[in-house]
Image 1 (cartoon, rainbow, N blue to C red):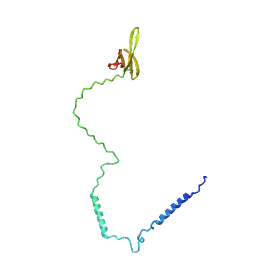
Image 2: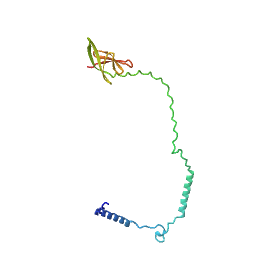
Image 3: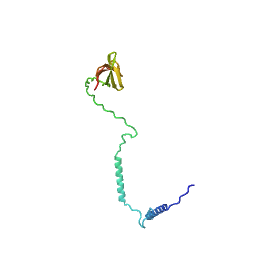
Image 4: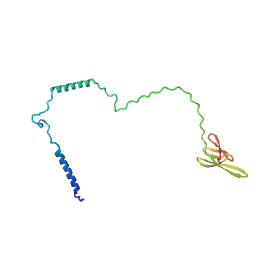
Length: 179
């Protein structure tokens, strides 16, 4: 069993102050009075109501009842617990038929290859040029008539240029070597 700590003076003062405040509030409150005719001073009974006031009140009640009967409240026009039908969309009038312009030719796709250098080899006394091309697949070496990159072929290699052909549509482009 855990040892019980003794109450400190601080806690005792708090309990005493709370009890004192509760007693002071109880003594300061007004005394309880019983309901009924015996509660008031002798000779004073229930307040008297005049007959004229009662008849005026009954007349007003009757008029309000007549007004409520005359006002017919319409039942609600929608059920809050069900979805309504979707509104039918209105269709716009069909525009006049306009002749479509002739389709534009497709824009040619730019060549993704760049000429970065030209290598020259001498074989049996004849110069053989090889184009050094850089593109999306990396650096490619190709001589005349060889494929350069997927979908491209080198047609001719000169001293400072290379003619490259796209194999899909036969489009050619001359790539110049930049100084």
